[in-house]
Amino acid sequence: MPITADTVRRSRRAEPDEEWLTVMEVAREWSLSRQTVYDMCSQGRLPWYTIPSGRRRFRRSEIEPILAPYRTPVTNPRARVKDPLDGLSGPVTLVPE
Image (cartoon, rainbow, N blue to C red; front, side, top):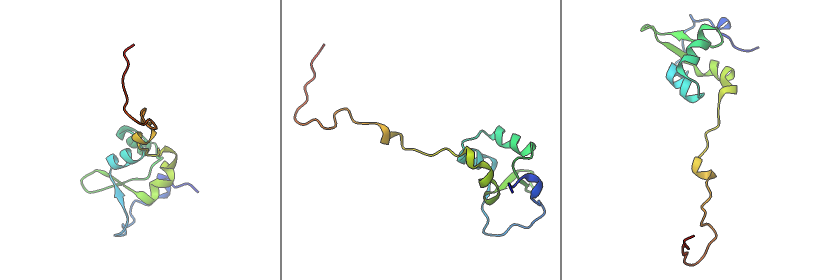
């Protein structure tokens, strides 16, 4: 059964070892905009909690299964670039065209 905002009881006490995320942390980790995170909350697709200051917090354990399709793998852009001089030996001279 998927976790939705309706299945989460907002009155539960937090366990001390749970990881809580801010809206910005959720947006960055799952490559979403902040507005998309807010929209998902208002549509009931993302469970969230309000802290006394009025800001939203998310339990990582509750949102990871929901946002799994949005995760994009982090790649090293330099790993894909091949050195054009790789494999050449000796001095290289440039010849004008």
